[in-house]
Image (tube, rainbow, N blue to C red):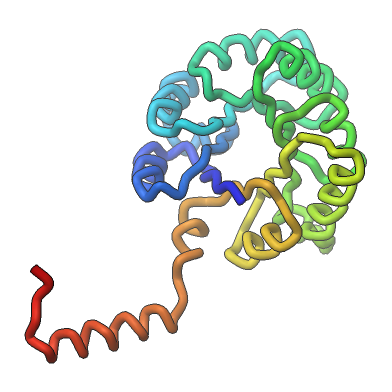
Length: 217
């Protein structure tokens, strides 16, 4: 599974990139707002830190304006993935952009039928929103499973990018089902390494080592 971080906080991205665990970044208008910086400026800086895909989202809702904004965003860097909404105009833009050789992340997916259409439109990534489905009383993981089955049935190359992840359990379940990518908040990515028995074991090892009076030199 690939790990993307879902943030526009450059300091967080830089720190996580240095671990060697980061495969890409996803942003959206809300995350850009939180950064307090101009979208072109912050996105360019993110692309300089991360070699993998960096999703930058259009804000237009009509096809022509989406394509105009996509052209501007694409010029930021070669690793930009244009993020479009799962609407008819968004799918039309997806088809046009992918036909032109650009990466496209189709976002705000809440049904298997939507995911099927995105794959037909040639999407590089489809972003089903797990947490938001859970919030409505539905099972977000069931959607991931349905998309995985459909994509495998027809050998679609579109990658399932599990989004709106709220917990480490979401990550585990998405990986078990076979999602290609998980895009997670920085705190969730860091929490994946945590386990109380790991901490307890390390504490015991260090205590025993201290008793030996030795140093590794």
